[in-house]
Length: 287
Ligand code: NAD
Image 1 (cartoon, rainbow, N blue to C red):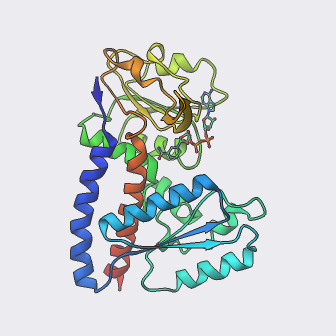
Image 2 (cartoon, rainbow, N blue to C red):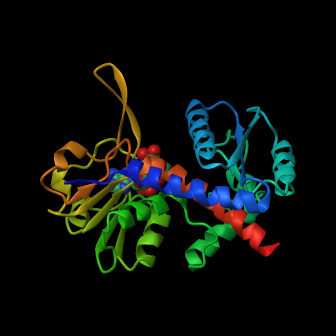
């Protein structure tokens, strides 16, 4: 079984981005800028934001984390985002989700100037993405496509199954695979006989968010398995990460699979860096 090493692909892409960003910075007399707004103190969000900040530093994107209190009002968040929308040194604005319950996520996301939306979560960018003329592509699904590309895994004409229909993974994954000319089936929590679908698939992308629920018996021989799931699990007294798939079972059966960790995870952040840089480039090419 080929291990689809997302960390390796991610490192290569970051190295290439670093070079491109250095050239861009020399031409534009400033680095690309990303602002991350973190409302509240959700521990998982704090970890994700720290990873994003570190990754920005690696490739030469100037990042700042704006920490706001958990009781911030919509008007206060609006004022911060407005300021960033009007700051010429900021190319990307990211609101870390989930937000505290009293803030309406959709309303907050719509405050972001779509031209500064590297996650592609504003309605305008969602529309462009599904219309086929994307401004940015959804980070996690695009990371999956980059892994497939790197390992020369053919998508056109293949049968693909996506498990999960969330706005950030399943649905955009479906969209990118069909744009790449796969025949795609979207499965979800109400799908009857999930295994019937996965056993017929050449490529399965698992994003159900259920720890280790798929194994060898769910996949066709020589198929390709992409595991998007990330779950913390205590193994031998240590906190480990596992996916939706029991990776160890697949060896000798499937053709290729992504591990967890070091599979899709690192690619998501790399795609965020790439999107931020693309937005910076788009801005300067218009000016
Ligand atoms: P979500 O909870 O929003 O969506 C889960 C989807 O799975 C739903 O659409 C649901 O219909 C479907 N589902 C649930 N049970 C199912 C079942 N038994 N059979 C078939 N489908 C079922 O989750 P999400 O935000 O899409 O994330 C999915 C997983 O991916 C989570 O583990 C999350 O942590 C992980 N994730 C990883 C990355 C990354 O960078 N690797 C990024 C985002 C999310």
